[in-house]
Image (tube, rainbow over all chains, first blue to last red; front, side, top):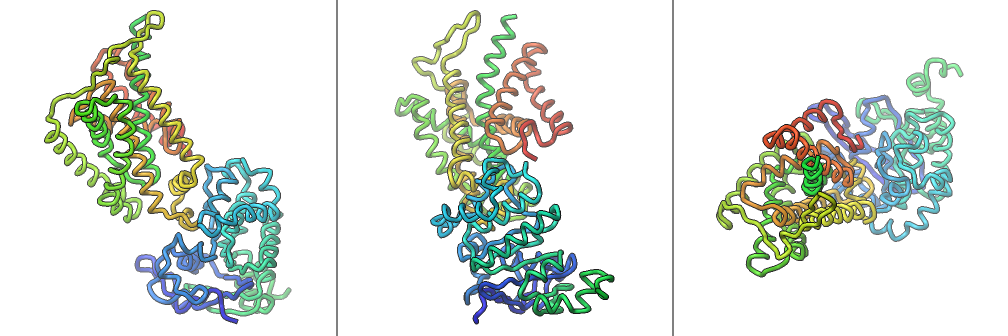
Length: 242
Length: 290
């Protein structure tokens, strides 16, 4: 099986401080892959590199066999790679509908936007009733639905999410995570950066662990959930004896 | 007291032009995060465009908008391509500093060009209906300024529709709010910058035409209009074009009132007082989103 996304030997830096060194990972078609790691490990930088917002110092990022570093940032989504950024980054003064419509801005997505609207509204029915509301007036969980919806409007083959459960009411977290499973069932690969390690590992087929800008571990979701280091570092001391 | 009421009317009529002048500056600043201090000079050029069309071809100044607006749009594209397109490559903090340098340079160059082409004299456009006045009770309303106010409002309303209905209008607003998120949704942010700058310049050209027909134009009006536009932008805040227009009307009336109450010299003071008070008490402006 050839990978959809292949990152190899990626180095990135902010000023003098090294954010990523030699990061290698891949996501296959239809896979759910989680990326775990403490704050400041470089997770967001990695997503930024893939999305074309951060220029890496070295390494390659291949998408479907072609070099993504040669593609300008606004064209990356056109190739089927959509991002739900950390903190949602919605257009807060605009309506739900406008935000979703902007998610289908690229020509290919625009052609199929009617079907995409239906897909998003079927996944998050509350967004249909709220579609004329200004995004800033929604709750955090509903805003996260808009953020996921906006990315889905691009009809992606890979959906990358940066901390989608951050700052959201617990009952809505599971709604978001359930939606991800459903999206994945429709054939969309998912690359998930998540602090909620237990949920992420339960969901993911595979996971990578990023610490200090390096990949320090990788494996199947269930396997990492049993791993003593992972349990101690990410699930808390009590989880070791669970 | 009649004098005051008449002053308020004249203030409203002038304020509409302040609003139009400020809309272009607000759009450019809000979207590109670039402060175009040559905005007043672009207004001045639009004024001379209308003056030329009137003096050489005997065009009605309102009809000349049909040429001045597209020509200004084109000028905006050129200015973006040769100047401001390079400024936006810097990060946001550097951008404002660089845009000030580029803007002052451009303002000086355009001022010198205008003196060369049209001399330093005041020019105005005198149409056959130039002196016509509508009397409402004891008030007299100059027809030309009333028409100008109507045109200014129509342009602002058109801009509002453009930004809320048109695909690229929404893209421009999205870019203003969060350019990185805009990039992630597939918006070519550089193109949004170009469009916003060109539209801003077109609005300046339109404002210049209305200034020349209702008042007069000279090479040195640029700085004054940049200042008025800046005061209105600060008063209104970024993000709402209709709010900017209302803030323009407010400044016009406030100026007229302070001139009537405290005397002519205080006309220019009130705007600066508003500027400082708003920045201290409500930095995001009356209608600003953030």
